[in-house]
Structure formats: structure tokens, C-alpha cells
Amino acid sequence: VRQPAPKKQMPLLRCLLFSCWRRRTPDAMFRVYAKLDELRLAKFSSCPSTGSKKADAAFAVSAFFVLAAKNPRCDVSRLRETRRTSLGEVQFVSVNRLQKSRCRFCGVCFFSKKVEIFRKKGILKGYEFHIEVFFVLLIFQPLQPNDLPLLRPYLEAQAKVCPFRVSDNTVGTAFMWRKFLSTAWAVTEEMLIFRVTLKNGKQYFTFPIGGNDPGKALDKLEEYCQKNDQPLLFSGVPEPGMKYLFDRYGNRLQYTEWRDSADYLYTADTFLSFPGRHLSGKRNHMRQFYRAHPAAVFRPLTKEDLPKAVQFIREFNARRAATEQRSAIEKEEGERSCELIENLFELGLSGGCLEEEGRLLAVSAGEISGDTLFVHIEKGDTGCPGIYQAMSQAFAQYMIREGVSYINREDDAGDEGLRRSKLSYRPCALITKCSVTVGG
Image 1 (cartoon, one colour):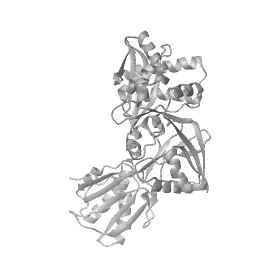
Image 2 (cartoon, rainbow, N blue to C red):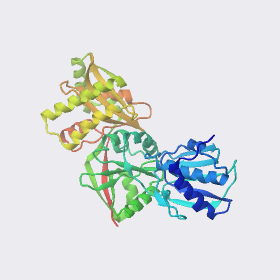
Image 3 (cartoon, rainbow, N blue to C red):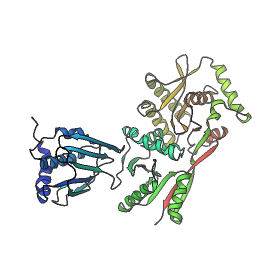
Image 4 (tube, helix red, strand yellow):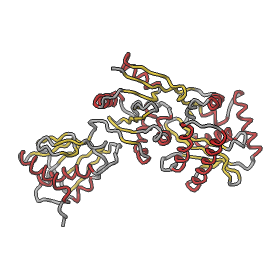
């Protein structure tokens, strides 16, 4: 025996049954356009029957809105599902959050963008109704750690279609800097867009990320900025994105290149073997380390190692803070490095350590995206000369596999010492990124 509908669903149910359905013939059906969050269609199978196919279909639509309105999270995977229920066949596409609006028939507020009545289509054991979900307006929401697995497909699609090879388009970087930049995200036209707030207080957007044409996503972003009365600003745009924006906006575009945020890109061989005369000093430093620490070995991090690795990084941060003045960016990087290690496996990243008789000497973490290994964290005991050369090579040898040709060791954040160190490894390219203003 099916239970009656919960009381909290009845107002919307009555709205649909008596305000909308009574205005149409029995052959009428709903086709709903809406924006919604995750919705498990299996819940429809438990909807109580009213004894009328027409009323059942109307109830299913009301349940759709009620259930969707309760979901605070987004399902951006654009899943296409078709499931048989007692009410017929439901066709469903989930892409984003609901947009609150009013029923144009009765004026009652509910979560949809548009409701239209059409003639019914083929019948499958009762009414066949279609709930079709797509983007109408961009809705940015704060980036949370559990969002990142949902966003990974867009990052990977970009790496396959047009590899930017920038660290900004990785799970690790998005996670580490989400609080410092107040990162929010939205998906439109199957393209991911991040919104960040820089220290000048202005909101900037990333170039659309994914495997589709960025033009349609930019159309929606322009509409969003226009309706919210804010300038169209981009941050961290790499060279391929700049070419596209130049072609689209022409003279309306103004840009500034950020040298401090340029990523250092190396060929994989650079760290696999330190080849050539110009890297002979790196090889010597590495040999010096292993002579002084013959028992040191590299091994991948396991879940049991994570607390120990986090403690190692905290001690590293404390030593740095005691001996030198650190910028806000350096402090943030130190704190978020610990957080990244704590969530290493939840984020789908990899890590490794150099260990000597149970004592950690160095810790590193990164990920592979497309043909590039991105090194997000590398911390070593500076009391061990050659530790960084040994760690960088060991981690590269562990991570590099067939199809991975490059290593991105991120930017220098304007630190002169770090800049000299990164340049000494002879990068094959500096991936510059620009901030962009699109004028009216």
C-alpha cells in the first residue's frame, strides 16, 4: 500500500493539479525546462498513485521540483538517464542548480525556469512525460573539496583537446588556493568556468575549460556579467586562450602579462636523468646526498603515512617561519600543503617520500593531467645537501609513464631565490598567463 504524499509536497501539487491541469485537455502533458541539482529518479517509483494517470503525471512533476529544491549540491556530469517508473518513462538530464521562478499560469513560486504545455507524445504504460534540464543562467557556487571529483572530467577533457599545460587547470591547484582566491565554479555548455577574487577585490573568470567550443560558454558568461552589472575580467589566461580572446574581442581587449605566475615547464628527461653538461651540478648534488645518506630510499605515500607527512610539512613551515619573513602567499601555501596531503587520496593525487631509517627527509605530491606531470608540493630537509635534486628525480621516475612528456613545476610567485633555482634546471618553456579586461 503506497503512502500518501507528504504534506509539504501538497501545496505545489495542488498548484499543478488545479491551476495548470484544469486549463488543458486530458491529452495535455507537461514538458518542463528547469535547472536543478542532483536528483535520484528512483524516488519517483515511490510516488503515491492518485488513481488517475493525469494526476500521477502532475504529481511526478511536483515531486521533481520538491526533490530538486532540496539538493544543495550540483551534479555537473550532465548525466543522461532513462528509467522506467510506474508513471511511465522519464528522460532526465542533470546539469546545474535550479533557478527560482513563478508559474506563469498561477503565479506560485517554484524552482523552474520555464513551464510549457504540449500535446502528449507516445504513451508507455500511462503518461510519458519528459523532464529536460539544461543551463539558462550561470550560477557560481563556492568550490568545496567534494566538488573536485565532479570537475575532473572537464580538466581532463581540456588536457586532451587543447592542452594548456597550466597548473591552474588541475585538481591540486584548485584545491590548494580555493580559500585564498575565494574560488567559485559553474558549468555551462559542458564547459567549466572558475571565478576567483584577487587581492584588488575584483572578480575574475578563467578561460572556459573542457572539450567543447568555448564560444558558447563565453556567450553565457557575457550574459551573466551584463545581468550582474560587472566587468568581464579574465585571470590566468594562457597563450591559446589569449589567441581565442583576441579573435573574439579584437580591440576591446586589454591585457597584462604576469611573469610571477608563469609556470616552469620541463621535458620529462630533465628530471629523469639530469642529462647534459649544463645539469652536471644537479647530478653532483644528488650523488652527494646519497653518499651522506646511503640508507635513504624513495617510496610512495600510503594512507598510513599521511599523518607523518603532514607533521613533516608543519615542522618545515615552522623552521621557515623562524628564520625568514614569509609573505601571505607563502603562508597560505604552507598551510594548504598540509591540507592537500591530508586529502591526497580523496583528490586522486599521488605522493612520495624519501625516508632514512624511518625518518622522513622529503615529501612530494602531484598529479598527471594529459601529457604533463604537475608537481604541487616538494618539501625537503634543508640540512641535507642535495635533498631536492634527489627528491625531484625520484618522484619523476616514480610518476612518469608512457605518454607523459612534460613536467610542470608551477610558478615562482616572484621569489628571486626560487626563480634562480627553477631557471637553473633549464625549462623548455615558460607558460605565461595574462589578466584580461574586455571593454564595452
